[in-house]
Amino acid sequence: MLFPVSGVECSAALPVAAAFCISFLTSMGGVSGAFLLLPFQINVLGYVHPGVSATNQVFNIVACPSGVWRYWREGRLLGPLTLLMALGTLPGVFAGAFIRVTLLPEASRFALFAAMVLLYMAGRLLFDVWHPRRLRKPRTGAAGTAAPCRVLHFGVREFVFASGEETFRVSCRAVSLLSLVVGLVGGIYGIGGGAIMVPFLISFFGLPVHAVSGASLFCTFLTSIAGVCFYSLLAPFWPALEVRPDWLLGLLFGVGGMGGMYLGARCQKFVSARMLKYLLAAILLFTAVRCLGQAL
Image 1 (spheres, rainbow, N blue to C red):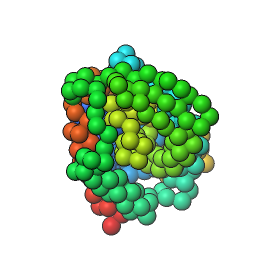
Image 2: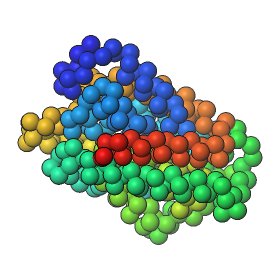
Image 3: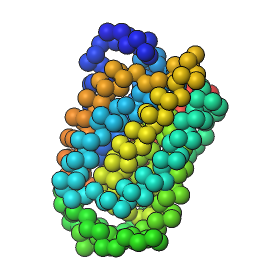
């Protein structure tokens, strides 16, 4: 099957299967998997135009709602956290998309920078796992009893929520500033930013992975809509770069991702937070190596 926008020629089953496998694993950590689809499209499918970033975001738009819906049904979708992340991320997404098209059409220099950031976050996660005295002691029971989240207070400076018997306080300003940086990175590479945001929320804010995953996926969905719209608006001004998304390829990725994210969100509560951190660290390390390979 030929995809005329991207120039990719492959079986229609390949993007569906790849997205399903990737999304099943990554959605348990609150990550859509778009950042793994990027090297897959570049290295396996040979899709190297800037439009690959927008195509990744099409995947997010189609795939994320199933995982978000599952987290919402289980009472693990934090509205205030989603709002703060979205407000900070959206301006960064627009700026990132513009930088991707104008300054980094090949993104080799930024790939090196992103690899360093991802390596640092993976190391931070592993350090927290290997030094349990730095971590909060879980009070929500066994791995299969991830408790619903309850918002206790939401103000200008902070919001407070409870997960099981434990209470968490989050600085609204810190989350918004972090989201702005994450949105910039996500806009350039066509990812929702969950791969970057979730490790920071876990490591620096001390939040439980079972509580932040739903908000991360929902924010990824919202920012991906904005990113695809902005890339589509930029496309007529850079016709030689093929900036527009490949909708057909993105939809096939999304169909596979939809099933993978739903099953991943449903299975997450049966996996311990420690194992999820190992999973996130492994994903980050893998992506960092891929970024280094693209940069060198």
